[in-house]
Image (tube, rainbow, N blue to C red; front, side, top):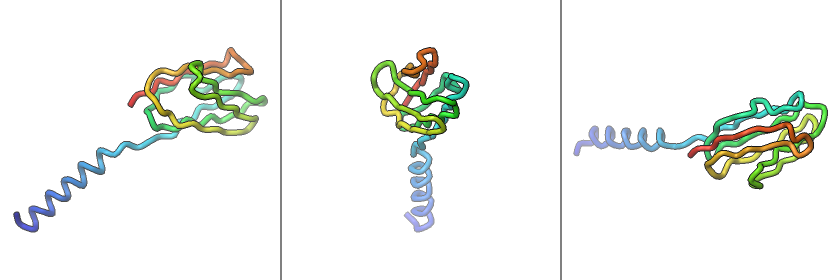
Length: 106
């Protein structure tokens, strides 16, 4: 194999390896007017959910399956990293009519 051929093969391998790397996203969910906005999101395992409370009272983002429970103060932010695929419904413990859903895939 010539040197030029080796470089081409190596370049192709690097391209395959770098394009196959997954990238985690940060998805923002706002709390405003006693609602999660957006109320329904899709995400991937490894993504970060960032809750931003721009409401006048504290809120929680509490998973109905018990996998997480986050307290977000007024004008505060909190984050979690999604660890498993599936659908997670969540709500605010202080305001149970505030609900949301995250559909998590690999």
